[in-house]
Amino acid sequence: MRTTVTLDPDVAAQVQTLMRERGLTFKDAINQTLRAGFGRRGEAVAYQVPVGDLGLRPGVDLTKGLRLASELEDEAHLRDLEERK
Image 1 (tube, rainbow, N blue to C red):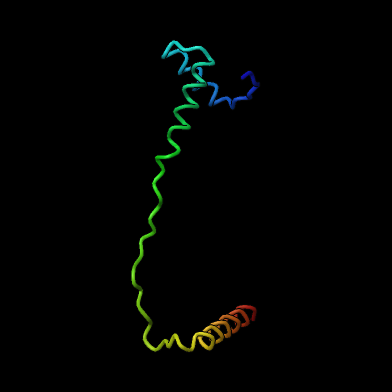
Image 2 (image 1 turned 120 degrees about the horizontal axis):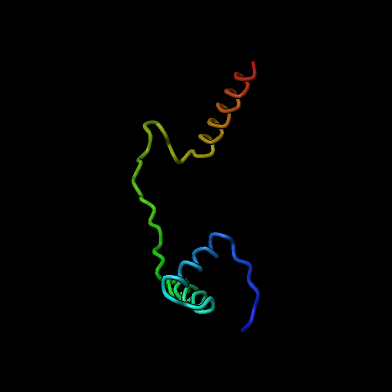
């Protein structure tokens, strides 16, 4: 397949280096680089998020979650009002 591609200067320099070091044509250097890149797609490892039990804070009753959320929101509004003074 014939196509026109505009390479960034740093990529063009790397292709030129590859051509010089391995004695490749431009076409072969691009094809080998693309094949190597496509071959790495399956090697990705899923990131594992560390998990830890933070426990409950003393005095926090999660059965009353809406009340707690409301109290926390009220406290935040009061802090905002105090900062504006």
